[in-house]
Length: 328
Image (cartoon, rainbow, N blue to C red; front, top):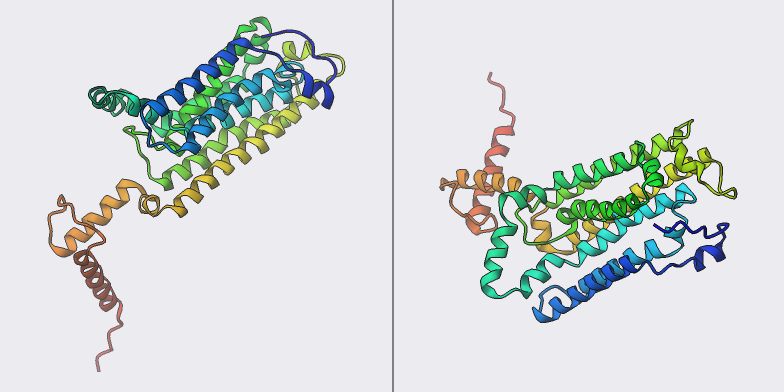
């Protein structure tokens, strides 16, 4: 992490405080180039706009760190918070939308594709990519890096900031992968559950934001002692960062949830999977019982047989609800 002072924060200094950051530049270029090569080699079924999304994610990763955002991240805490939100939410969303797992899979030879698919649907990978696993990791990272002495440790060990940046992108990717990704993984939650998890994902942002917004003491004394003279006082800086975490984190999470909902409404196949396989299984069982079929039988719930069973069930319920005339 460069320790050069970029000077007083102004719009001019913010827009001109660029650094090369060769390590991150190489990582971004390798990821983007590798993705594009595999996309063309495998004649991927992944749409071109998803390729653009992944490349933008790689570019955004470097821009966040090399621009004025990264330059001022250790000078003012609220700028550090902006960097956090971009790395754990914006960059991972762009990367996940690129469907990189599918691109890599389709570029493999046919024989290796089968083995790769078995690996992706294995139990260990399935547990690792569960929505609850992603939510737990996301929550742990948000809380552990904001409500502990981690920020002070970064002052003593500058390499921790690079580790933090990698951790944020990885945690965000793991969280958003099963929620907005359509990758060939073992876990494939229904869209209703995905929306619920988006709402739950707002909790760590809200809690951490409120704690920082309402604190009356400096939780990062060592970090704040290195603030330049032009920076706001520590409490003002921390309160501003808390407000950004609360409003910005929840806003970005809601934006992603609304985007998912729009794709569900626009896609008939996704609407059919809104409630997930569990509720669909319940519906199939009820219909099978109504027609006297084996529940294990793959009965099409949209078939004529299913519709007739549904109408009979409605007629029976209607007759049960009809009030009986009193006897004389």
